[in-house]
Amino acid sequence: MTAAITEEPPQIEAPTKPAFAASIGKIAAVVASYLQAAPLALILGFFFLLPILMIAVVSFWDYDFAGLYPDFLTMNYTDTLGSWVTWKTYLNTLKYTALVWGLTLVIGFWVAYFLAFHIRTTTMQMVLFLVCTVPFLTSNIIRMISWIPVLGRNGLVNSTLVEMGIIPAPIEWLLYSDFAVVLAMVHLNTLFMVTPIFNTLMRIDKSLIEAARDAGANGWQILWNVILPLAKPGMAIGSIFVVTLVMADFSTVQVMSGGQSASVALMMKNQMSLLQYPAAAANAVVLLIVVLLMVAAILRVVDIRKEL
Amino acid sequence: MSHEKRTLEFYVLAIFFAVFVFFLYGPLSAVLILSFQGPDGGLTFPLNGVSVHWFYNLFEQQAVGDFGASFKRSFSLGVMVMVVNVLVSLLAGLAFRRKFRGSTVLFYLTVASLVVPSIIISLGIGVVFQQLGLKPAWYSSAFGAHLTWTLPFGVLIMFAVFNRFSPSYEEAARDLGATSWQTFRHVLLPMIAPSLIGVGLFGFTLSYDEFARTLMTSGTYNTLPLEIYGMTTNVTTPVLYALGTVTTLFSFSIILLALAIILVMRRRQAKLV
Image 1 (spheres, rainbow over the protein chains, first blue to last red):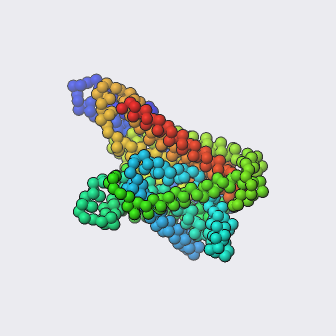
Image 2: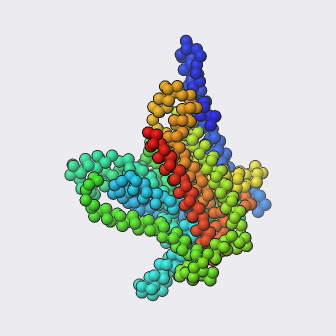
């Protein structure tokens, strides 16, 4: 709070020296900015930047069951990248990411489109938007578990289908399968797509659409040539969220595949539980590079700083 | 647009939206219903009688480990994160209103904190604490880990708020002779208060449910999400659903409380104008 007080340049007593006064005011403003930004910088410095640097350093260290030993080995990297398992795991993670990204993008766009263009009152828009948002603020793990009574061998879907005589025996691959993993990931992450797309769609000037209609465009042409290009920034921001969350996921994969599938983060988690920190760190560095490259690719579409 | 007849597109999308909402809430309601499973019932339908047996079971120590204590830890941690999140985001938001050296770096650092996988941050903080000889605990290392996730949301929200905030209100206050503290306290703060409540809500709920970042940083004592995650592998009774129902209802009431406060504030402001 004290920093807020210093926000205003102090009153200057010597009006005869305006240049001097202005420079003092400027300095005070700069100091105030630094004081206000300091807590954020310190917290991110200690709990974000330092840990990432530490991971990069530790990834070159030696280790055994008793501890870590500072060193400069590339063993952790050659072990990871030289292993067929790693590549298969990456491929699997990328497969989940591509599927979940595609599904959340399509679902998220249509949900946001419906809210933005078909709901006529702002109140109703906000109510329906909140209906979509509330589950996102509840526990991910509970939301994963909630699929068990639905998809399980004796779950709702199977028992209904069997009773209706559509299938002779329960479908086994509904739960503890890739299908379950992707379904749960879509369930958990679609909101990250809906929110930014809704946000950009709401800012589209309605007169643009009327202009397009007056110029003779039909519904699909308006959608394809007017709305979609303008919605791109929202889609990009949503994609960043979904891609980074799915690339780093281990709990959904573990719970929903019943331990049958692997992801990069799950591999890391297993190494961590065996106290193989340098191996996990090497994996972390590789994963980080992959994720940052993906984000950089998405950012080519949009300048997020302009979109806020 | 508002007086046109509803098109086919509307009805198709309305059905799509309804299915989506059902997809969001359907499984949750299955958990809600099954938590009232009879004492002999299992993890799936049908209901074997209706009882509150599993809720009783939840509050017995031996059934599900230390549910009460882990809830208390998660709640305290959530409140800590909420308070720090609001204060730090507000200050950073104010700072970003002016250009200063390093502002771009700090901005991208904040965005990066959102983008870097949680498990990497969890591992990093775990290793830092280990190398510094510090003991990780929910109130130190996990607290910091949660902030790396909630602060970017808070800062970006404040960033968006101040981008749309016209400085003419403050100029008017200043012209009327208000000091900078008065301008802040009586002009700026009331106008951005609803957004601050939102930042606080995000801080609390994200921390309360956070799991991946707590994994390597919570130390000896589990937070609630870690406790629940442990339960998924070794608890095979509906007590798991009872816990799910209780924590979900708790989250819902926190969200409703925050929304109610925001609504009241908006009303009051509307009256003033």
